[in-house]
Amino acid sequence: MARKRLLLLLKPFDVYPSHESIALSSNHNKMLKVLSYLDDRRLVHKNAISFCQNILKKKAVEWKAVFRNDLSQSIRGVDLVISIGGDGTLLQASHFMDDSIPVLGVNSDPTQQEEVEEFSEEFDATRSTGYLCAGTTYNFERLLNDILENHSEPSEVSRMAISVNSKLISTFALNDILVTHPCPANVSRLSFRIWKNGTSSSLLNCRSSGLRVSTAAGSTAAMLSAGGFTMPILSKELQYMVRDPISPGASAHSMHGLVEPEEIMDITWFCREGNIYIDGSHVVHSIQRGDAIGLSSGAPTLKVYLPRHLLSQCV
Image 1 (cartoon, rainbow, N blue to C red):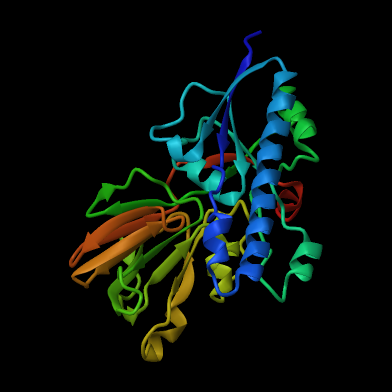
Image 2: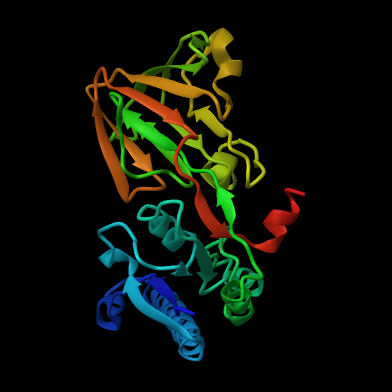
């Protein structure tokens, strides 16, 4: 039987200011404490990578490791992707994956509530939520064994397809997109309607700070913080919300809603310039006045080995 081929996609090691530069700061004692804490986080992440690699060395698999920033083309020729970092690393992996290869996320440094409480008066010690990451160093070998022995199946998580002027953007959104003016202080002017089977909803014209649209996976992130609601992880609906609408009047109830799997959201942009931010700030697509943006859940799904508690919510 052929040996399975695995790709480890790694969050890079963060680089922090030197102690010499911190010493010049007026609050250098506090900054040194923050720097020491961040360096501890780097070490924990490094140890997690070594831990996972040592386990892989014991298995009958072929594997290679790549830092996520070095990934520049579609992932091909492997049976499994293992992302080691947090949700951001898994999100970046998803941008280079189709629906043929599953991914297992390993949260290399989960938030420790006692640390959050200990440092609450000095800085925020919260780390990656790891919402989509089923693995940690505590259960990685068990999860890996289940996958290699075909005792575990990945779930198919919905992604968002994005087109501009009928041309599909190659990156599918796993979490969410934000359509907005490049300057956060500027008003975003857009209109949108939702199409289904050749008929559409009423056209809504908006002046706001932008439009956010999320998948089910992204509904627990910025969408939830803005007042949205959590969707079942395997839902194929999209959730949208106009950010800070200006004088919405009778249309206020339509500034937040759902796009069903068989529907398409059609957006027209009316500012001279704008951006579509895909899954955060790293993937940005520029738009200009008159551009038509189409959104749907028709993108290829992503196969993800999800945390057990997320799957239990779908039963």
